[in-house]
Length: 328
Image 1 (cartoon, rainbow, N blue to C red):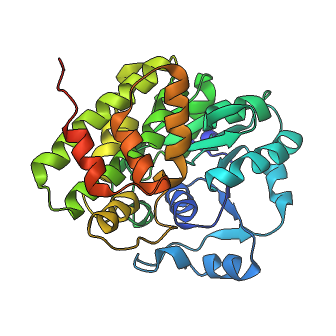
Image 2: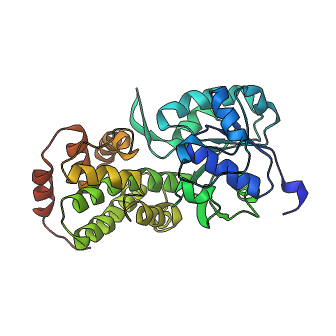
Image 3: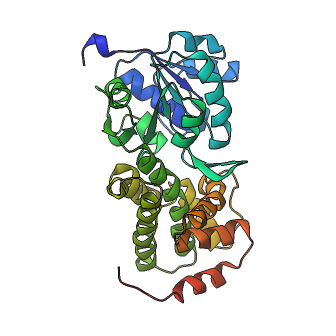
């Protein structure tokens, strides 16, 4: 990449994924700063320490600030906050950023609103950033591995090809390979739904149902993702790419995945850490939106029953097994 492509990046959020993105940008030679809440966090990052990545090797020193004036020089912005905090952040960015600045949305999930069963991140951005170029940034990536410089691939999806390309170019020269897409809804669906399916796969593993059951859940979960994509007007082919099948395979591979670990604990009869899994915060809105669209999401509905409605896990599994098999 030539020097002309090296734009100034601001990463909002100093958690594990924010630190990993910033580290990859720095390794690519892209100037990057993190916008964080705490001066202590900023000081730690300047020493190459991310508290949420305590098991990862020391990061490169990362510039960080608690002052939002660093947004004034941003050529691209990554919003790396929980789904619940993303909307307020986007409202502030709409007032602050120039319209041509791409905003990468890194949260995976649906946001509950007063007038809808749930909105995906690009839909939220469409309401709050009408003049900005939103990019969904999602794929099969564990933060600790990206922060350590291990190879990974991810998707940058936007209705504006130039915005996706700007995000792609920012990582050229790092081990994080970015592929572009024109289907932000499909990419967002993959990122949101894979978390829920991973909880189901973890439950199966925790119950000792075997590898066959986990493979069946993963595959039929992929079919649910494709149905959801079609219902929302996305390209079902996107679901079989990095942000769908790729992220699902990673999240269902073992307890390195927080959603898988959450399901494993449920299946084993333990009380899972409530902060572990994004999927538990997404599943109710996903079920409601699926019903509004008139589509069947049996695995997603099963997870919702266990996580939010206190149904007995064994009974829910029995109900799934009792469903009549149809033409695949």
